[in-house]
Length: 101
Image 1 (cartoon, rainbow, N blue to C red):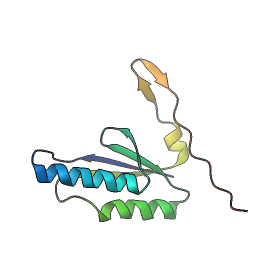
Image 2 (cartoon, one colour):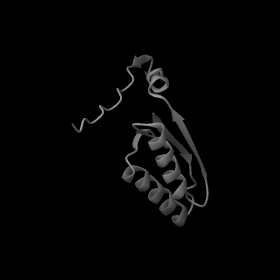
Image 3 (tube, rainbow, N blue to C red):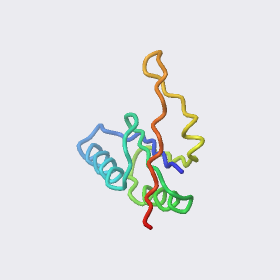
Image 4 (tube, helix red, strand yellow):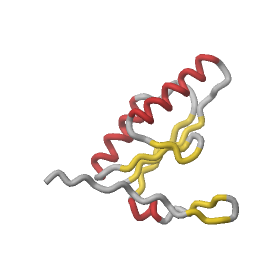
């Protein structure tokens, strides 16, 4: 499963920029990586884990702005079409699962 966080936050005042930076740092601290400006993704091993991270993002939302959280499966993420100019770029593979035993 993948959690995608998309946001549009105001940056017109010093306080708004600080809230934006804090939100972004919290996303990175939670394991999200940037795929585009204001679009961050995180791979999760299960649906329960996806819900935990989506709830965690909801816990550190800034006061202003819009944040959207989308949870999709590996297959749906794999079907994403990425273009770099007019050339299509392959979708990045999902991270390997850890084997403990």
